[in-house]
Length: 310
Image 1 (cartoon, rainbow, N blue to C red):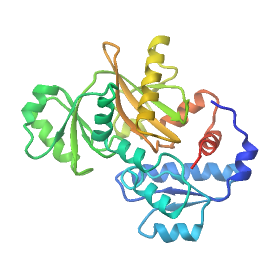
Image 2: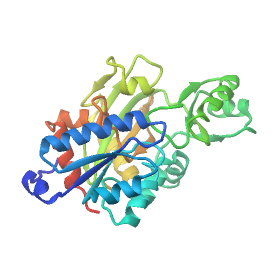
Image 3: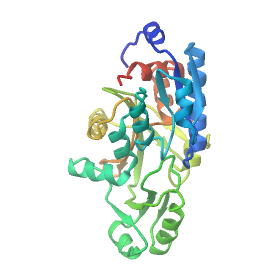
Image 4: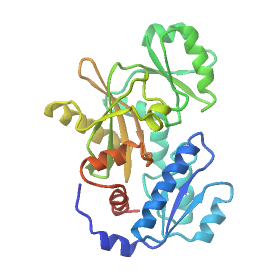
């Protein structure tokens, strides 16, 4: 990672307000992430405060008068361009991607369509609705991952291989989003890589005894295994790095983001999704990856703040 001037960063920061909580299904993780960031800023000696985002957010921000917002809102309202647009209108700088990139990344259908258009590898998918030919989806995609179109933290996600279960899990996923998709299930290794502007954190390879990386595997299961560096040849790592950079740049991302991918049994990589507000809990992948290169949590915050150019 690039060398940063700690003293210069801290001197020029001013008042940093951390936004967390909110009303999305990912509220629990957002609170944990936001509090971790706030505690880190306090340890660094940064003048900081935290706001649990609700209906009074505009007046809360006017009262706080921040020089910078550190956005740790996960899910709808926080990662989809809504809070970013409001902050733009208010003239308040913030960490992470802007309105367009946030909206594109949050919508898995839109991001995948864009990646397909650019020739970036991503699993085939179909949008589900009440009129869906359930058996037709299975015939085309075989084993599928049912996903809310806009959502994260693996909430509402399931894997099915028959029409009956597909319809059942579609209805379950509707609890998390009004739009649901079925994505071809890629059997193989899963990877996650943090990107910060033109810099990349080490890729981590993920292993779990669960069927896939569900909510518990990501945030609760102490048996989740992190392999870093991943089990990849130099050539394959270079190929993966390029795909990650292309995914980040294609959505016009800025600041910190995390790209999740799969590698099938033939060695081919597939983009799953890009997260513009990655988690910052003790189980989160970006802090784990940073730690692998000697960057502790507080220094990671400084790197994020140093990259802020809005």
